[in-house]
Length: 151
Image 1 (cartoon, rainbow, N blue to C red):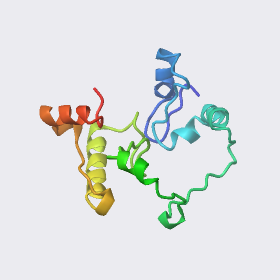
Image 2 (image 1 turned 180 degrees about the horizontal axis):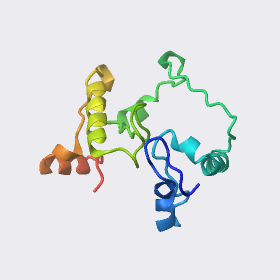
Image 3 (image 1 turned 90 degrees about the horizontal axis):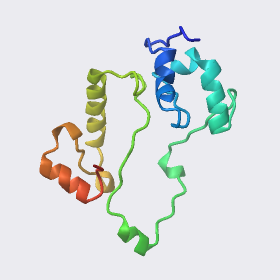
């Protein structure tokens, strides 16, 4: 497996590099793209089975239909404490490699697509997207003070 690459050219060495350099990091293996899971299946399947406790034949079912969500309103006192929500995107868009393999140009394209999508939000979802590359020092400090950005 040491000489294998995935469809994007992501190598097995790149997949395990972090774990080799940081043996205390937990798993320490990263996929460079969706095809990494097939290219490095003997390792990836074992990790997924051990860490997520489901085997290769398990089927993940996801239903993102808002009407089917069971999310009762928060009690009024709790709801008053919520000022904002941060969204962390841990995966990628379908046509792009995953984080370890994505190029700077692809990152910029992904950011553009995310901003375009965020700009369509209305009502309670509407907000401001802050790009770390274009923050002024005053904006950065305000976001830190408001606990939206960490140092």
